[in-house]
Image: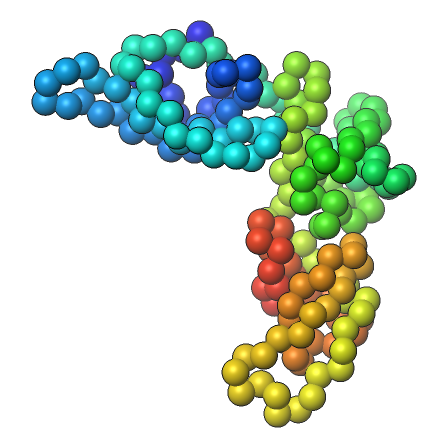
Length: 185
């Protein structure tokens, strides 16, 4: 158990039968009355952010979350298979447990998977990934007056909007947080 006065950004706590990561915290000492701690907590499993105010000195249980670097092997239906790079143990995760991660996963890609009490609870993708365009319309010269874009299907199956000058077969850099085109790779 730790005091809410000792909370730090990035710390994981167990609260309301869920695991939360501290996104923001603020110690408030009003002119009269007791001090309190205002926090923003991100649910590690669902990604939902909630605000919670704790009384000063209140205790919460610290959650020990282990992060392992794992290599993505392949998918079969809704199951995705990963291998621990150090022990060579393999695990499978369902598509629902991965959130938007399957849109950016390439075979042999290494990602960080968080475990709590031996069960996978979250996935950390790199901020950007380089993906090849497998389907898009040809661009036309002179259509760039307003920074126009066109849809392009990438090798993982996700569709992003790219500038008109991007062509079939090119590799582009995509932001995994927003799913947006950033630049040519």
